[in-house]
Every structure is written in structure tokens, then in C-alpha cells.
Image (cartoon, rainbow, N blue to C red; front, top):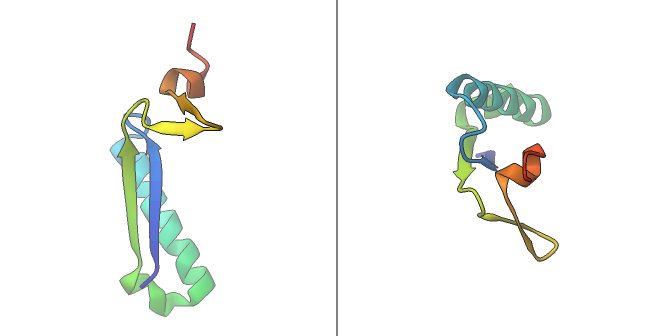
Length: 70
């Protein structure tokens, strides 16, 4: 069973955007593995709380990602 776990900053995607990710990732898996994989493909869009990211040993916040940090 193909499985994709997409981690995104909490509150950055609407329900419609999450649905679009699920559809497009499922389509991609079906393209790679054949359409038979579509029925068993699982996509999890997981929201990570602000400050729950780390890059290069430092905490990454939503403000830093969006450039709105003062």
C-alpha cells in the first residue's frame, strides 16, 4: 500500500488545499505504480504545531517561514 505523510505548518492550508494534496499525491502514486495502486493509496496531511520544526539545529516558526517575523 503506497503511503505519503505530508507534514505542513499548522493553520497554513484550507480544507480544500488539503483535499487537493490528497488527490494529486494519489494521482502521482497511480502514475508511478499503475492505476491498481489508487485504491490502496493512503495520504496523511499532518499539521505540525508552530515551533515544532527544526532546521540546522534551530527552531523554525511560521513567522520565519512567511517572512513576517519582526
